[in-house]
Length: 221
Image: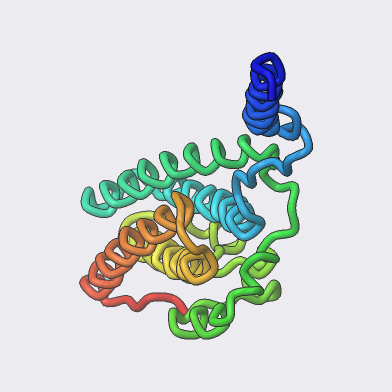
């Protein structure tokens, strides 16, 4: 083989190698638009966050309807719950904005029906999830408008007891929802938030049960 042919063969070989390398480099750029977009939040995450926003919002209503002329310890607890749940609402609304979900735009509690132990959780925590009981689309622990109106008009120890009863039951309902989410979600910030809610609301629920006992009252069923 002549020197010229050797050089030509070598040149073609180098060109072929360069084309292969260039094609491999350009392939991600050429097919990026056809790739499926990464999922920001799963359907179960969106469902839990969406419904927990509504659940937290009622906790704010309960706290705001407490008469100011009550035991300072009860007032401080109401303010603590208001502050923490208001912060969590802001965080969860941010997650909903990421996925373009408007609060109130979905069918409540659909996600929770896929949790295998949701009914057992509700029974364990003594909260009813039927529409007939609390009128809130099977959302556990929710107060009725009649109960909220009673809290608005209550004063003194009566206001303290009713507030503690409504909020303690509301917390038990929130715990049921958060535990169902913890079961359904594999990992991520939404799961961690659900676990944080379980811890915080369990502690506050225990404190409210103690405060009710000090006033000769019991938690609601």
